[in-house]
Length: 240
Figure 1 (cartoon, rainbow, N blue to C red):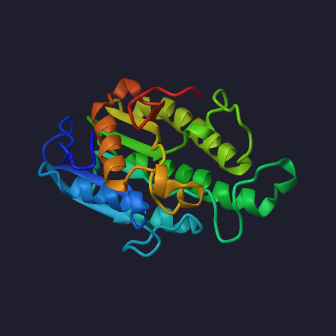
Figure 2 (figure 1 turned 60 degrees about the vertical axis):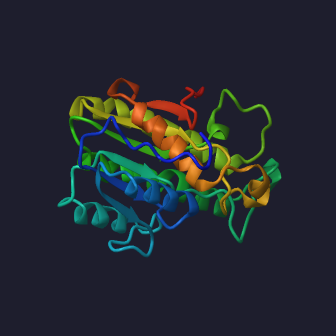
């Protein structure tokens, strides 16, 4: 799929489906919103972030519940995506060795990559359509324990591995409540964004619009029996 290839739409979702994107102020989140808005079969796209109305801030647990409550009138949603994530900040870069581990970095990374998404599962799963819906939380291949051969990036790897377990566990419970829903851990690959820029993202990363189209195409093929899977942006099943 080239950058110029137009988005073909979410054909597997019902006509007039509704979409929700968390982290919509970031490059990838904004690309998801733009691509979904371009689908004539989509009745509406809601993008949330720290300064949206309603606001959703992972550092403020109450804001997650309040945002979900505010969205109840728009529910059910058929595609829900969390595009927010943290790899580095003005205060730290990914750890290369044990001697660089600290509570501050672990807590900041887990807050955005694990704790916030966990609360999204709690509050957004009840907003999913029972018959056909998919919720994707962006994970990362480096969160695969089996695939870890290089080491390093302790906080980020661990936060994504924990996120994967939360998704897998929630998928088991959700299967009983929402038989037509699927919860997916989705690896976006390298995207040209602020998250990847310190790691040559501008040179090796895909444009956000292309990455969003590729991942939406994967989600369009997801079925209820795929719930609890760890998938790449190419649709490949990744090892836990």
